[in-house]
Image (cartoon, rainbow, N blue to C red):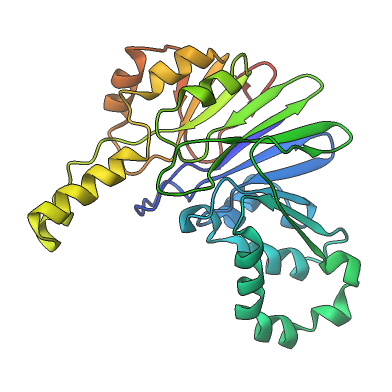
Length: 281
């Protein structure tokens, strides 16, 4: 199993970090976990062809994790993909894809995809799953794990297991001990991390009480740099990869995390890892 961090950013624009997205390679299979801003471009930069990706796992329906999905679907068709695309995620995914296809209907029609590709190649197999309901393939399994991303009702981590390796990608979550328990013994844990917000923008544009509530809410449903090491210590993976980073002070992130867990890397776009060995490629 190989992992590529395609995008390690979050909704705050950062020229160094694309939106949340991970590519998992298991044999000839290519699995995309989330499809954030710039995921398709990063996929190509990683030396992969979007037409070869046949499975997309979605952690939750926040826009920064799904915004490149239309680009991804259309690009696969432009590149004459030969197999359908499986899209698996929480409730809400089917409605999102249906609305997306309505939005793109003119473009789809004018490009004549129905003449260039078979109905089988153009098929989108959308499957909404509950936590714990696995996706089974010949050489691997992917299982959604419920996480705490309140007020999002359906938010998942994804646990991907092959014959020789286990990977867990947290998605967006507050520090959540049940996730650490589900990830126990994973070779690699990709976990979101959030520098606690003290920015002044909400205070400049909102009444003070509302601004403070907004900042508190935003900090509430993410895992801070001071909490992620504790969660990793409970899970005890071979390696913790930090993602969902905005424009952060990397040295400050390292100092916070190292207080609780020392086997970690502050993620960067296009880093590649052998998951079983928890070593960079």
